[in-house]
Length: 224
Figure 1 (tube, rainbow, N blue to C red):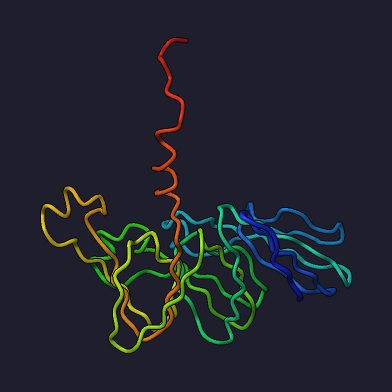
Figure 2: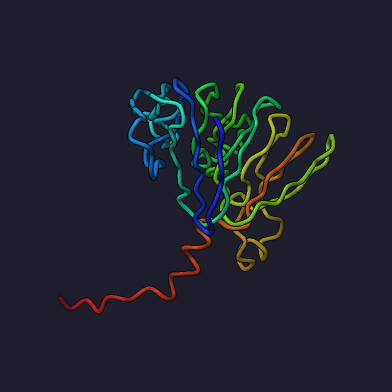
């Protein structure tokens, strides 16, 4: 499989496939394909996916001729990143997975920290990507990469955590100070990531974008 990522601010990745090669995605990501691609929908497996709000089905696209092509598009302004999982497994926020080769395994990852489960929101139930192949993930806004040494920590707003390598641990801590919690505008909790490993941060989040657009939305007068 060969691929090319193009476009901004809504990028697409177009994959060129040989006969018999397969690509896997969740529903809604395919934007165009050649007419010699065959689609098959199957169960993704696991009650954890249902609990997490993820689709319990996946689409498998199989090339029936050499040179078949298929494109997958981002659902939010940002970037599409190709990730080679032969270098190790990654944990991502749910919804980050776009598509992958069939040799990649997508599973539900539950954070082991109790506090993350109670207060972490999206940080509690995440996606784990592992296996031996290429996966494509969506990054909202721009990507910032940080390398954390053993025991090194970084404090991040939960929505800005895109993903991290499996060796990184994650916990949710309360913002210090009552005034900071009530007046700071940064919420009640922050995410703490502890190394060793690689951390990917995204500069935009869907909730923050929606909040910034609210003042510009039309207000109904209530008269029909």
